[in-house]
Length: 231
Image 1 (cartoon, helix red, strand yellow):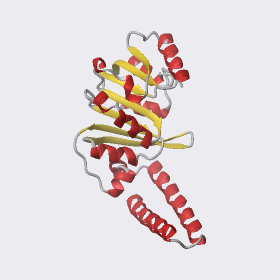
Image 2 (tube, helix red, strand yellow; image 1 turned 180 degrees about the vertical axis):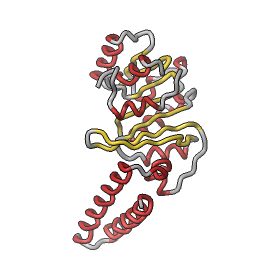
Image 3 (tube, rainbow, N blue to C red; image 1 turned 135 degrees about the vertical axis):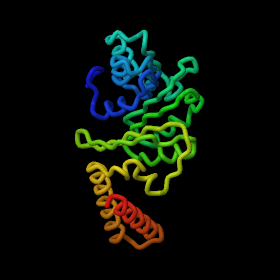
Image 4 (cartoon, one colour; image 1 turned 30 degrees about the horizontal axis):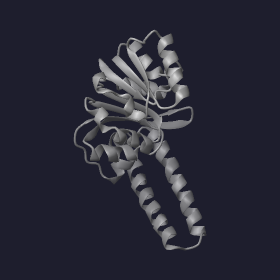
């Protein structure tokens, strides 16, 4: 992977960035995504934010190598603290983290989202946390994609400002993904059901306690809900 050829995962994230956007890529690592977006004429300008010194230095070096120092600003900062009001950011990308960590980044510096109209978020796990945050904070899902790369399954969530109400199944599985039911979606949740059933088996062989019984019943609920959704 490099600034000209992204991974399938990051290419999917890039595909949802509106043309002419001013992008903040949080947790930018080598800054491949912002460099790609500017090279392709998708992003007008970009900020690459990194909280760790090594990746920050890699991003600075990459932007310099690509000859994009006039279009991409690299900042070492904690999450959205990398965004300044003068940047006039219109789109934020956060990829390659867990859903709860992405939510904590969004919650920590809410003022950084003032001019933002689109969030493109790629959680490695627990996308449910992002959907819950979106409902509570005036964001709605415009699109969702699920894909497999190198044996791992990823989800990409595209949020625009607006009101959204999801039921329990939609919050867990994703409303758009439930509609399309692509094979990798079925595969992901079939694996999850199998995991839950293994946990249930372990619980049934363990000591009978109120906590264990509650956990068993909760898993039964999830299994039934997901089986109905993927049928």
